[in-house]
Image (cartoon, rainbow, N blue to C red; front, top):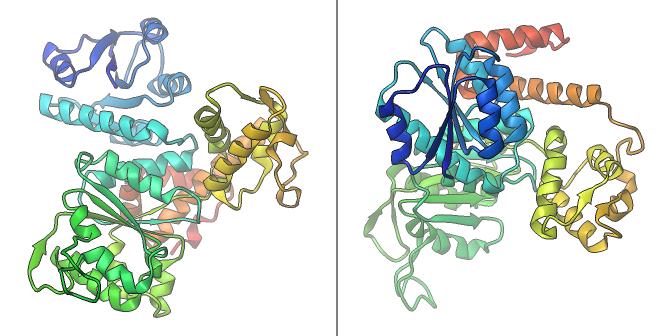
Amino acid sequence: MNNLLWIDASVPAEEQLNCARAEGLQIRTARDLTSVLDACSSLRPDIVVMASQLPDIETRELMRVLKRHFDSCQIIVLVERDQHAFAAECLTQGAIDYLLKPFSAVQLQNTIRHAASVGRGLKDMVAVSVGSRQVLQLANRAAQTDATVLLNGESGTGKERLAQYIHQVSARRDQPYIAVNCAAIPENMLEAMLFGYNKGAFTGATQNQIGKFEAANGGTLLLDEISELPLPLQAKLLRVLQERELERLGSNQKIKLNVRVIAASNKDLRALAEQGQFRQDLFYRLDVLPLRWPALRERRDDIIPMAEFFMQKYGDGKYLLSPAAQQQLLAYSWPGNVRELENVMQRALVMARGIELQPIDLSLPAQVLTAAELPVSAEQLKHSKRTAEFDYVLGVLNQFNGHRTRAAAALGVSTRALRYKLAAMREHGVDTDAIA
């Protein structure tokens, strides 16, 4: 990442530009739409810093232009202190952050560093749909803290990749990232695997061995499929999370820990806790920053970009998707989520009869196609996108039991902006009064 485009009708201060240069960025400035388009034709910006007002184009429209041509660029909006609602709207439209004028050089430098880290984390993340972008915005906020994160979502949605993303955009990115699948390790080995052991702790323990917590010290530990953790081991994990220290098996020496824990599950931990199948105290310890990664069928705007990403990854950019193949991909229900899409695209590239993939190359099961022969109009796609956005807002509100202020904070918008969104949802027939 090494290009920054600064868009402002006024000339930025040299001190501000020096902040960007100090981060190793090449800077190009633009003062109106013509100079923006000229700069973009010769420069692929990684970061865009843009003022809230330009003489010949609205900020919202300019953001759409930038995202259309440079979907991976990170946008920072400069806003006046009375533009809180506008700043919140920019975040929902795809901006990574905003700065309230006047801002200090340190504030600018920290914001640029954050944008740069997000850009690095997005290298192999596809997030085009509204729902995906909103989850990534919440993930970005979570990454700036050391709080425990709980990822929920169906199998194959990419929860582990989201955990890697959080690690990559956090201050811990240069420290270890360790992933443990709690369902893949035999129960009698799991405690030793997590917490380590000393020589002689059990038969076969011939030397000291650090556990995954120690290996991840200073960095991030992902506990995937944490619902499979045995109840006795849940109690020990709870103590480790509370005390931030552990004892290896066969030792009474306490080892201090500085680890961010990310837990992931494809099951509803709250429901399991209520049923006595998961410790409630551990659930509340994990449920500090909950994030739900939507199923692929809930973020259909991601399907084609993701398919093209896998084509590039496995086909070296030699293949194209025919309109008919795109139609079939959009019409499929994707019960296996992103993992299934990746497998389908790999198989299609092996079976391809030409450089343009056709429906027959995809070999999708006919029994789970959803109206595959029906054309999807632009209006249908727009409606699908809007529905996904409304569902996401309702989900966050329900998560906070209808508390508007807390829900707005989780969504990254102002309470006023959330109020306007709920009014718009009511106009489309959504019963927002049913929220607790």
